[in-house]
Length: 232
Ligand code: ADP
Ligand code: ADP
Image 1 (tube, protein in one colour):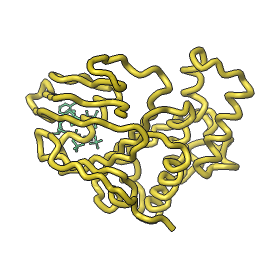
Image 2 (cartoon, rainbow, N blue to C red; image 1 turned 180 degrees about the horizontal axis):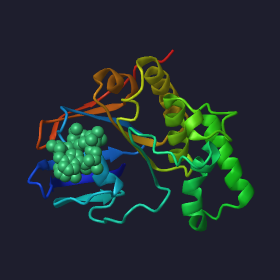
Image 3 (cartoon, protein in one colour; image 1 turned 180 degrees about the vertical axis):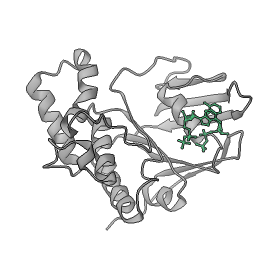
Image 4 (cartoon, protein in one colour; image 1 turned 90 degrees about the horizontal axis):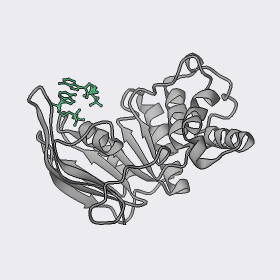
């Protein structure tokens, strides 16, 4: 069943750039969907539209299974990770990971101890045990990205959106994070939309790969991978 769908989406910027034109994309529950295509084809724009960080010029972003409702997701339903880990430098790893819970606590009614347990679990899940009290400046690039992933997952989002999250990392760190992410996805059952320039990464991680046309972006190919790439 679809989590979210882009229906006939067009996105024109005030500069005159037409980034997307007639993009139809339905994201199914539980899948790991990679979005690939030439630079500038509108991958980030598509992700930002799903995240609610931009609005379509025409067409719609539709949430849930029903035909027309455009109910926006509640805070905590979405986790977003960008290429820059964007950690707050004045807060520790635990402080950064706790932030989304502070923003959604009223809805989820988490008590202090429960919130702390969730923060600790998220930090452990990404392999940062022992670094809860560290500040971002003390962490490597890969560890900062792990903290950003923990922050995105701490609210148990239905949908995790990732925009070239590992593109700035060296190849070994990137491969380690690919494996960590794959394990997280298999363990959590979260739906993932992953933007990448790397076809290798897309094939390694995904259950579905959507290839976009050059700008203006539309779907050029939509490939479902029945047997995901085996992991060691
Ligand atoms: P991709 O992620 O596939 O590289 P983007 O979605 O970042 O592509 O960009 C698609 C096109 O829209 C590019 O030509 C980009 O320069 C342009 N673009 C993206 N954001 C803006 C913006 N805020 N204002 C104007 N043009 C933009
Ligand atoms: P990404 O690396 O994720 O594709 P970009 O570097 O294309 O991101 O864009 C970074 C930011 O700059 C985004 O907020 C995007 O909307 C904006 N942006 C991108 N291209 C343009 C552009 N041509 N004019 C104005 N803003 C842009």
